[in-house]
Length: 194
Image (tube, rainbow, N blue to C red; front, side, top):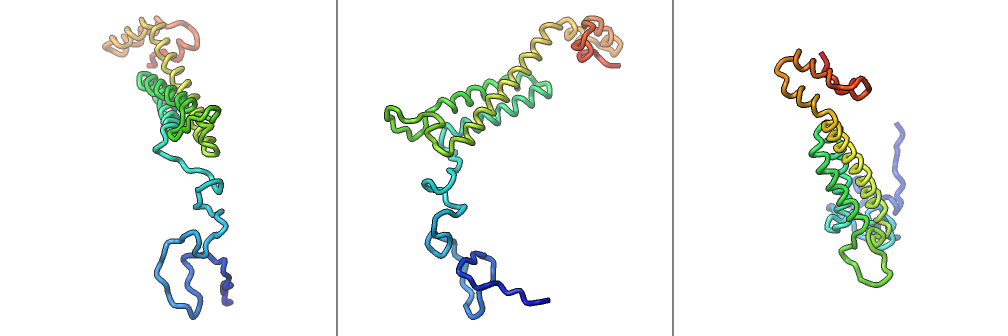
């Protein structure tokens, strides 16, 4: 197998590579801005100023509420799908509140200048993922509330069926409750199966 030697270039930044021949081993040291790394400041680890995208700040209430809205809306939707409408309604309402407050809120370091951007617009380039999270939270919260309300509306509209089914002591008595349902799609979905 031919010898595959790497070129001795000053741009070789592999921290796991062996040192060049003739140079002694050196202990590991973390990289700093001026130690031969990316001197132009455009490296992937830079997050200051305009050099890279801003990171998520968990101490900022706007960003935190945007993430909470997304998570609560998503879980509220899942609880609505899986037939627990009370938890879905609660999480949907919380997600709706957090999403709206994230979109309308003022940042923690607000300057108070007239005409200064407020809400997520004050975050600059970091606002895009937070706005997406807040809007997604609002959408999933609306779906969770819609699922919970439709579940409650079905239980109210077909109350006689639900009371009969819950009070039935045998399977044959439970099957008799199907006569209380209409002969349409909703009746076919809610019908007790044998």
